[in-house]
Length: 195
Image 1: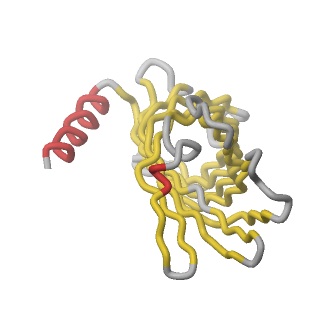
Image 2: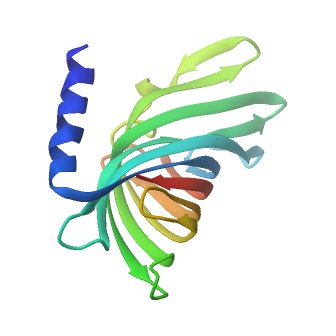
Image 3: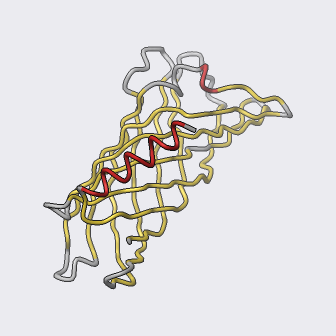
């Protein structure tokens, strides 16, 4: 309960020093790039859907600068020698974003962002068995997630802004020192509400 109150307090203090607040939500389509010396050639990984949420604030002095909190799901399905499995992962973190406006109304823009993420929970499911991915070094640790995207605001009024977003990101583990390496390529499609 303290965590919830602490988050609410942080959001309220940050809002006092920001111009706008916004919320983004949508779908992640993630592809895994998994490398291991023990890996056989018959491992097949397929992209799988997940969701993302971001709560952001725009800087009071420069509306081109945004920062906030994010939640990401990077999921995949796989097969190796007729052994089928699903990887379901949940990551949380924070981001810093810079927007370059492409028109005068500031309704269409390119954004570049840098997210720092860590594994909140993860599991591998196969034939009724569940394994914790948080115990695997290639999934846990600190992740760097650079992101590039486009946003177009469909509705832009004084009280509400509603937009569509498309992002591409590449996530890499910064502190994994094992011989098994993992990264995510992700396409995001979502909506953006600004109050």
